[in-house]
Image (cartoon, rainbow, N blue to C red; front, side):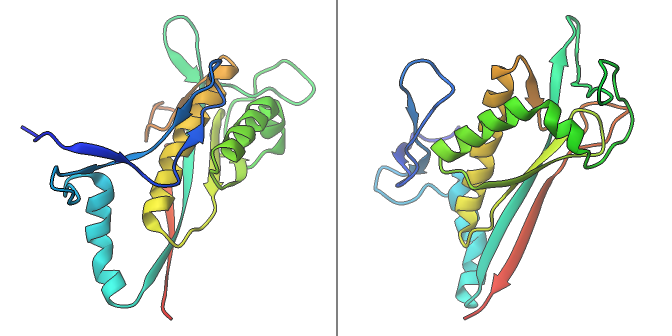
Length: 196
């Protein structure tokens, strides 16, 4: 099995958790051996090892992520995508409808809550757009010159999206293919390698 290790707070990662009632904060942690060295199987340290050849070559990776997800509703038996409405009606709008602003307007309260959470937690979220399938969205994060921080942002954004969705009686799934008849979701990585 895995050995006992100690977890230490990642400096600068302390942030409020604005979606809970009681004042609460969260902090990211990374694992260390008891002698103080980095635990090699911690995902943050695996990434550090993978980055080292680039750093040794004098290259700086600049990374941004895009997370695609579905907002979902539970109908009493199963989850289904949150279906947008035909503008000006209560009728469902099925089918492909990439980048429809009306789909964003319908989830404006969710997006406003998500934006507030991202501001409170210093998550650099940028654009949001509706994706190909009903109930499918994407949120982009800003580029940063620290791949570990970029990954932290992606993990924190997923948590923030789920929290904001819950406030509105919805769920959020980042599964690659949660529904047979709709488009899959992805996590896109944008990377540039900069030299001096």
